[in-house]
Amino acid sequence: MSGDRAASAPGPADDPGTDDPGADYPGEDPGDDDPGRARERTDLAWTRSSIAFFGLGVAILRFRPAAGIPILAIAGVTWLLGHAARPGNQRIASRRVLVVTVAVSALALVSLVLTLAGPPSNGLRP
Amino acid sequence: MRETGPVARARTADKERITIVSDNATRGADQGREPDARFTMANERTFLAWSRTSLALVVGGLAIAQLLPPFAGVPWGRSAIATPLILLGAVLPVLSYLEWRTNQRAIGRGARLGRSQLPGILAVTITVVALLAAAVDIYSRVTSP
Image (cartoon, rainbow over all chains, first blue to last red; front, side, top):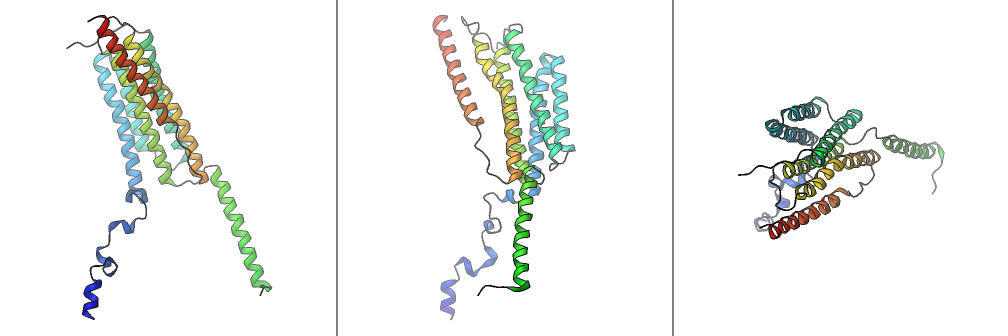
């Protein structure tokens, strides 16, 4: 009897207390099964996007304050969109995604005009 | 051994009702009414990641056009490198929005998601721009040392 027990003891089937953590989560990523973390990741993605606009706005503010302020405003709006609206509402989701699309594309078009038609820059020399 | 009587009839009716209910559920989801929030949030994060990529392309293009000293002997060099980057930065958010919308509907239907075209577009553009930048730099160094 004790011999049988010793032989089977190292097997994982005998010991449910120390099973691998993956057993509780059939998915590849445990976080994917948890809506709470998905929500947190989405909030963080909005924060990251807002910070990207904010960094660009501050950088441009040093060279052209008139162009920097609207970009900082976009950063603020992006942050509000990510944190004021709750995901799940289809209409709000569609609107806020559209706002970001328009903001980035508009910024790109202004930059394009500036590059093609703006005054040539001497660049920063060390 | 075929079942007859009220019980069997009720079972058949149940089966039919379940089929109808599930059909209605599919039809309702077709209009994107109750998709899984985890999938729609993942879809939104993907869109945001593409938006940030676009922003980085615009910033890179602006830096080349405004902060980089001009290439000696190649006055159009900076614009030639910066323009495709900024142009891609303008187009990517629109494409990524359309893809987000398509995926949102597919999630609502419970359908498979299509393969994204955006990584290919990004990879080709960046490769071409990198080769162009190398060519402009080498040409500038060779012709006006």
